[in-house]
Structures are given as C-alpha cells and as structure tokens.
Length: 227
Image (cartoon, rainbow, N blue to C red; front, side):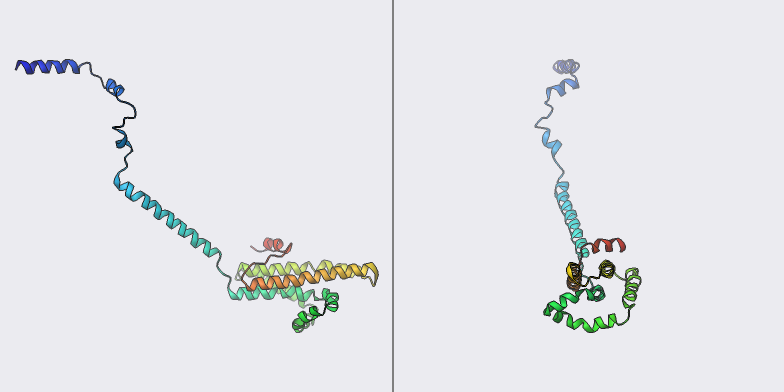
C-alpha cells in the first residue's frame, strides 16, 4: 500500500512539468514512422482511380476519332456530279479564246471535238450564258437546300466566268490586225483558254473524286460569297 502510494506520487510529480510542445520538439518533422501513414493511399483509390482515368482517356480519344471521321465523310455522288458539270460553264463561255491554240495544235482539236455539240447548243442563243449565270447563282448558290460543297464549286465557276469580262474588253478595245499587237492578243487569248481548260480538267476531276478544287484568285472570292 505504501509502495503504490509512492508510485502514484512519483507519476504525479513527473507528469506535472510534462508539456505537449516538448513532445513535438522531440520528434522530427518528417518522421519515418509517420511517413507511410501520411502518404499511403487507400487501396480502393489505388485500384479504381487509374482505371477510371484510363476509361476517361479512352472514351475522350474515341470521341475525337469519331468527330474527325465525321469531318472527312465522302461527298455524295449527286453533289459530285453537279459540281463537276458546273465547270463546263466558263469553258463553254470562253471557248472563243482558244481559236489560235486549236488551229495551231491538232491534238487540241481532237480533245475539244467531243464537246462541239454541247458548245453549239450553248452558243446557239446569245443570252444563254447570262441565263445560265442567273440560274446557277439564284437556284444553286443562294439555295440552302444544296450542300456547301455544291454551292462553293458553283460560285467558283461563276467568279471564273465573270473574270472573262477583262479579256473580252481587251479584245474589243484593241483589235490589231498584225504586228506586235496581234502577237500580244494571241498570247492573252491563248493563256485565257489554257487556264479555262486546266480549270475544267482540274475542277471536274477533283469533284468526281469528292475533293475540293481551289482555283487561284477565284477560290477566295467564292469562299466570301458562300456561307
């Protein structure tokens, strides 16, 4: 009994000066005994979190692939045909600029020969070109029922046909009969015809393949007109 009373007095005497701050100073700030407890992640999070992120990454990656494939969908066959046929319009309207090239090179005449009946029908009435212009612009370009692919290509050939005004004005203003003036006129007309021929081949073949042909100068003007 006396021994227990002495032990109680000893504990009470040593516990009085004991402070919590002295205990904190005695332990290091990053104790190795407490480090695993502070950094340890619950097993449920370790097992679920990476898998969950992996599912999210895969699903987002799948959404990107689907969106990209939707942007690269092929153009419908009717849209290809309508767009390809439109490129014959400026070529038929400017066929007269090829009179020097066609007469000098026989293969050009062979190349154009299958189109002669259609060209004759187009040139049979003086206002056919203007009527085709109005039809393409108001019926196709301004019609939202057509796809943007068709409306862009149609507007591109319209702008190309409008540019034919400049060589026509040049030919009407300066009509030399010989000399350097005639050589210059022949060069301008031949260049215009070859550009129309290349635009026809490039534009029609690209449309048949479902691609978007972009003619120099003309494409930017067509983009601004088609919403």
